[in-house]
Image 1 (cartoon, rainbow, N blue to C red):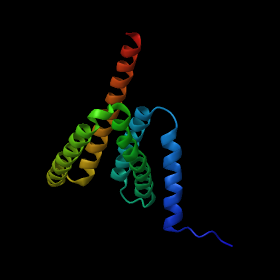
Image 2: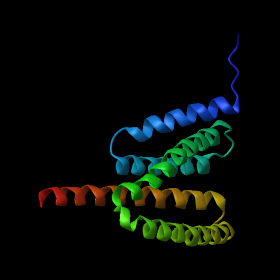
Image 3: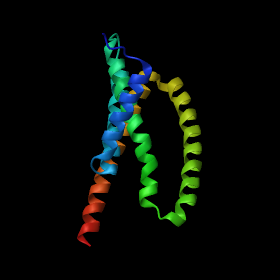
Image 4: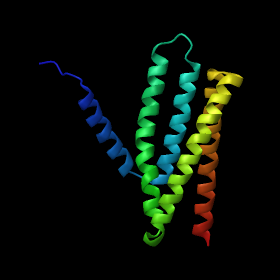
Length: 149
């Protein structure tokens, strides 16, 4: 009997992969790796001119990276913030997300008009990649500094 690939099977497989990925190793290092994956996916979507398979690979990488990053970013405040301050932390986090999502939508529209979509995706992937590398270096040096003290 042939195996039928349905949406439910794909969702279950993705959920299994996300759970496996989010259990192993350091959470912050995995988040940085996944943000670099988002940058790579945006870059793949930008370089796709007449190719049909390149955007599909880009969307697959983006979907996996976003699916793993969002639960991990939700878990970081729960792990790092003391229980008596979590309400304030989550309120501030929600406020920050609402403000930055509006600014991102505004900037995306303006940048599409000014420089076009391919250039904007390239610029966005470079900014995300450089930010992730810088954050990784800062976390590495701060960990070394904390361990030395």
